[in-house]
Image (tube, rainbow, N blue to C red):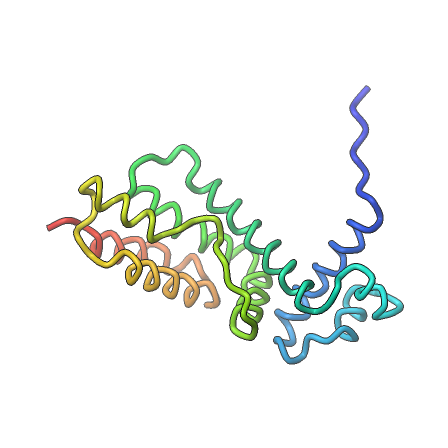
Length: 185
């Protein structure tokens, strides 16, 4: 006889339902088109009060969406980097993990992009490329460069590819570009 599955409280299920609907609405309609009415329709809710009951305000709802998407993306990156050693290989795993996530979950990437571009929401996906670059420089695996600038270039490149029709298509080229850009002389 198996162990019974843990049942989530109704409030957790409802929050997840609202979060999922918000992701869909953000991805399809953009930030300006993401209203409580649109979220209710997408979630099949009878009243906007159900959203207000589970989230203090739209800011909390959007912060929850951003957190959920970032946690899912970080899990993709962790899986990609599982068992990988060496900073060059970890950089490659980071790039591929982020782009694999974008290919597998494009709606989530578009939703997060809407939040980041239209609110003060910022944060980390659990990985810090600047720290990876600095570590590679300390180990001698990377040449000397400004780790923050290189990190911004990497994030921007990944975000641009993540929004393309086929995010994985550019993964090899991006890995090659950053491998060459960081290689010691």
